[in-house]
Length: 404
Image (tube, rainbow, N blue to C red; front, side):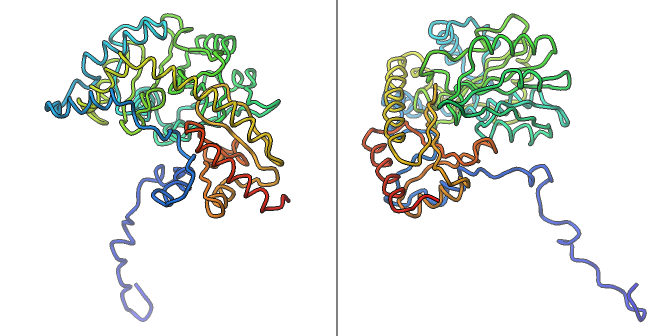
C-alpha cells in the first residue's frame, strides 16, 4: 500500500513478463563476420572477401540435375536421413575417394554443415557438460555447445614461423575425465592449420582411454594443400567415439544449397534420425538430386578447385608479404589467408575502416575467438583479377595511412 492510504498502481504486464528470449540465447555472441558483411551486402563497388565462398556459381551439371528434379516434381518429404540414392552415392564416394568403408547406417544427410554440427552435438551434449575446442575456429562450433548449455574450454593455436601451430600437450592436458566432447576443425577455418597424423593418433588414443567423444568438422578436408592433414575417421578404430560432420558447400561450390552429412557410429543412428526429424525433418529432395551428381561426376571439379586454391594461396602470400607493415601466415589448407597490419589490434574496427575507406571487405579475426584478435581473414576463393584488385586497395590504404 502506498503512503496516505492510496494503493500503488499495478505494474504493466510488459514489466512483469518482459518480451525476451531465454538467458542462454541472450548471452550468445552475434557473428562478428555478419556485423561486417550484413550492412554491406548489395553495396556497389566493394571487393568482398569476408565470407567463405568464391565468386563462381555451383558447376552447371549440378545445377541442371537439381533443376530437372524440381521440374519433375521432386518436392515431397524424404527419409529423415536422406534419400537412399544419395546415401549410396556418399558411401561410394567415401570408399573410392576417401578410402573409408562406412556401414550404411553410419551415414546421414543434413540440411547443411551447420545442421550436421548441431545434430551431432544435440546427440551428445547435455547442459553442464564440458566441451574442449581447438581455436580460433568458425564461431558456430563454440556457440552451439553454449546453446545446449555446455561449457566450452578453448585450446588456442598460436602463430609462429609463418604458420599456426598446436601445442599437443596443452590439448591433451585439457581433455580430462570431465570432458564430454572434443571439437577439431582441420584444415582449420580461419588459420589454415592442419592436424598432423601423429598428433591425431595421440588425440584418439587419449580420448579412447577416457571415453571422450571427438567431433571432426571436415568441411575443408578436400582442400588440404600440403597433403598432411590427418583424417580422424580413417585413423579411428572400431568402437571409437568419432563423428565427422561435412558439407557440400566448399569443395563442390554449393554454399547456398545448405546440404551436408554426418558419419557417426551406427549405434547413434536412431537418435540422429529422431533429431533430424525434430530439427528440419529432411533435406529437400531436389537439392539432394544435385548432390548425387556432385558426388558421382564432380571429382574433376574438386581437384581443379584444389589446384587453383594452392596457386592463389601462393600468389596472395607473395603479394601480401611484399607490403610493408603486413604479417601473413601460410595456410596448409582451406580457402583463407590470415594477415595482420602491424599497429592495428582491433580487427573489427580495422575491417570497418577498410570497407569505408577503400571498399575492401575482410572478416575480423576476433570473429573466430580471442586468439584471432588483431588478424583479418581473407577468402582466397576468388578470381586472380579480384584478388589483385583487393591487394591494390590494401596497398592504397597502407600508403594513405601512416603506421602508428
